[in-house]
Image 1 (tube, rainbow over the protein chains, first blue to last red):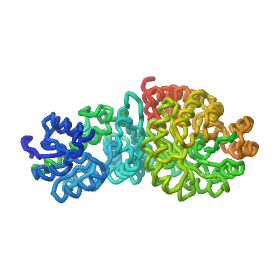
Image 2 (tube, rainbow over the protein chains, first blue to last red):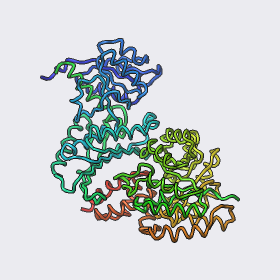
Image 3 (spheres, one colour):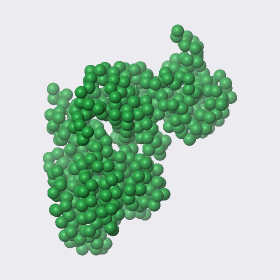
Image 4 (cartoon, one colour):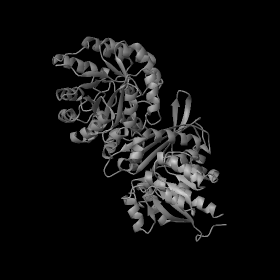
Amino acid sequence: MDASLNDKVKVAILGSGNIGSDLMFKILRAPGHMQLALLTGIEPGSEGLARARTLGINASHDGIQPILDDPEIKIIFDATSAHAHVRHAKMLKEANRIAIDLTPAARGPYVIPPVNLGAHMDEQNVNLITCGGQATIPLVYAVSRVVPVPYAEMVSTVASLSAGPGTRQNIDEFTFTTARGLEVIGGAKQGKAIIILNPADPPILMRNTIYVLLESEDVDRKAIVESVEEMVAAVQAYVPGYRLKNEPVFEVREMPEGKRTLIAMLLEVTGAGDFLPPYAGNLDIMTASARQVGELFARKLLGE
Amino acid sequence: MKAPRLTDTTLRDGSHAMRHQFTREQVKNVAQALDKAGVPVLEVTHGDGLAGSSIQYGFSLTNEMDLIEEARNAVTNARIAALLLPGIGTRKELKEAIARGIQVVRIATQCTEADISQQHFGMAKEMGLEAVGFLMMSHMRPPEFLAEQALLMESYGADCVYVVDSAGALLPDGSASRVRALKEALKIQVGFHAHNNLGLGVGNTLAAVEAGADQIDGTLRGLGAGAGNTATELIAAALDKLGYEHDWDVFALLDAAEFVVAPFMPFQPIPDRDSIAIGYAGVYSTFLLHAKRLGKQYNVDPLKILVELGRRKTMAGQEDWILDVALELAKQKK
C-alpha cells in the first residue's frame, strides 16, 4: 500500500553550501513524503541560509544542535565534510535519527539506490560513496549480474568549476572510495578509478567512461546490453539527465592471459539545474541520489 | 655558465611509445648507460605515472615498481624519479615507490588544477623526497596564469616547477615567456619539458634554458609520446657546443641512444602527419597511438579525430574521449 502523499516525514539538511542548497531545491521541487523542516550551517552570513529563509525554510547557523532539539526531524542529510560527519554520525545515532551521508566519511554502508538500498533500509546511517561512484557503479553491477566481472575501471571527467575544495584536497579518497565501491557494490573482483578535471569554458558536462573486462571472448552480449539498458532507465527515474552516449561497445582484446571481452560504456550526466548549473552533473547525481534515498526512508517510516 | 640539470625520462615518457611494454632487461641497460654517461636523474614509471597501468592508458607488461627497483639497482650516481598524476596515482603508490627506491617525485596536474596536488607534495616532503611540480598542457594558459599555479605548488613544498608542453604545441617564444614568468614569480627552481610534435623539441628547450630554466628533460632518441621528446643526446650536445659547464659525456649519450635504445624501439617517433596534427591542434601527445588504433578500427582519419579532440579542449589523460570522437565521426560517415 502506498503511503498517502499527505503523510510526511520531517527532514533536515546539514550544510548550507552548494550541495546542501541544491538538495534543498530538489526536495522543495519534489517533496514526495518529505517535509523539509530545517537547513542548518555554521556560518551566520552564509548565502545558503539566507536563500533558505527567502524560500520560507527555517534556517540556523547553529550546526547540528537545532536538529537534535527537534525530535520530529527523523531524517538528516549531511552535506558538510567527512571530518564533521564523523562527529554528526555519533550524535545522530544516539538521538535515534537516520543519517544520509553525502560526505566521504563512510560511517555506514555504501548505497546506490537501484542496486543495494533495499538491503540497507534497517541502517541508521548510509553513505553515498562519491559522485563518480553513483554514476558508474550501477552499470558495473548491471554487467556483473549477468556475467562475472574480474575487472572494472571507471574514468570520471568533471568540469573544474564543479569540483569543490573538498574533492580537490582529498582526491586520493575519491579514487580509493570509488574503486572500492566498484568492487563491493558493483561486483567487480578488482576495481580501479581515475578522475580528471577539465577546465574548458564553457564547462563540460560530467562524463564517465566505464570499462569492464570479462573472462572470455564468448559472452551473451544481448543479455548484457539489456541489463545495462534496464539499469540506465532505473537511474534515469531519479537522475533524469543520466544517459549513455552510445550502446555499450564490445571488443575482443588479446591480453597476456588470453582473449578477453572488453566493454566500454560512455556515460554523460546533465544536471537538472535545480540550483547548480546543468554541467555540474557530478553534484546533481549526488543530490538526486540523496533525495531518492531520503524518500525511500520516509516511506518506510510511514509504514509503507 | 652552468648547464641546467638534465632529467632523462626515456623510461617514463618513452613508455608511451613502447606501449608500456618495457622489460626489466631494457630498463637495467638504459639506466646503466645513462648513469655512466653522467645523467643525474632518471625517471622510471608507467607513461601516465604511478598506477597508470589501466584499460584507459594501457596495461604495463612489467609492474612499474619492479622497474623502479631494477633501475635503482643499476645506477651508482643517478637519482631515480617517478611521475605521479593525482587522480590516477595516489599516496599509496607513492609510498611503495619510495620503498622501492625513488628519491625524486614529479607531481603532475593540468596547468589549471595545481590545487589537487597538496596532499601529495605534503607526503613527498614528509618522507624526505625531492618534489618537482609538473604543470601539464602549459600551452593552454598564458604565462601569468601559469605562474600563479606554480606559486601554489611552491606553497605546498615543491623544490622546482616545470612548464610542461604536453602537446608539443608551444613555439620558442611561448616556451621562453612561460619559463620567464615562473622564474620571476618563484623562489624555487623552474624546469621545462618538451615534445617534438612541431619539430621544436630542441629549439624550445634551448629557448627555455636561455630564459633561465634550471632543469630540463630529454629522452634517448626522443623516445616518447607523440613525435617524442627532446632527444637527450641532442640537447646534451647542443648545450656543450654553447659552452655550458656540465657533467655529462656527449659521446657516451650518443652510444646509449644508438646502441642501447634504438635496437629495441618499435618505431622512431618523428613529427609525421598525425604527430604534427597533435602539436597543431594542441592535444595530449599520448593520444597519438590511441587515435591511430581507433582510427583504423572505425575507419576514421586519425588526424580528424585529433583535431576534433583539440576543438573539444580535451586535457591530459582523457584517452576515453578518443573512442567517443571516433564513434561519432564513424556515425557521421554513414
